[in-house]
Length: 157
Image 1: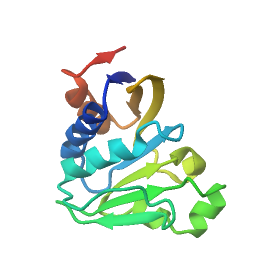
Image 2 (image 1 turned 135 degrees about the horizontal axis):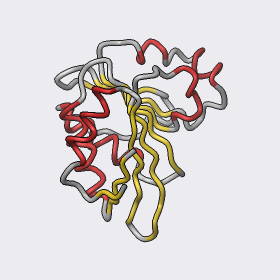
Image 3 (image 1 turned 180 degrees about the horizontal axis):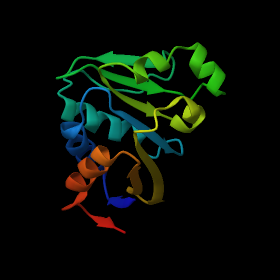
Image 4 (image 1 turned 90 degrees about the vertical axis):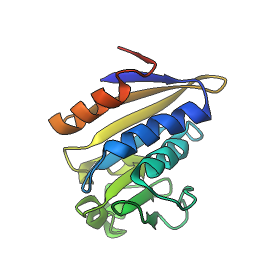
């Protein structure tokens, strides 16, 4: 696990951009953290790294936003979902097994539906604009990607 310290919205977005540049179709990023912790900012950065040119904002009421980048980019927000069953009925699993890159906010609400090989990122307030971002993956390939992205970043182990 890597712990990244972001001191601004710009740094959070930049971390996301660097991660997005390295992701490939089929990759899933599971985000968790309190309301306002920076999940959408991080997602916006990942989308930039994937080549998405649209505005990226939270799909809280529509559940999923689909964007075009170098591969399809799916932004899912489970804030209004109360159970894995509800998430399954909403059809999120088809995005998790597709050819695009999927980023899920509030992923802890459907953790049993997520693929085992995924990136997990937990955002926590540290005060002011500072955020602590815990990053891990059980996938060897994704762990190498995360290592390459964070090796020169402001991390603490």
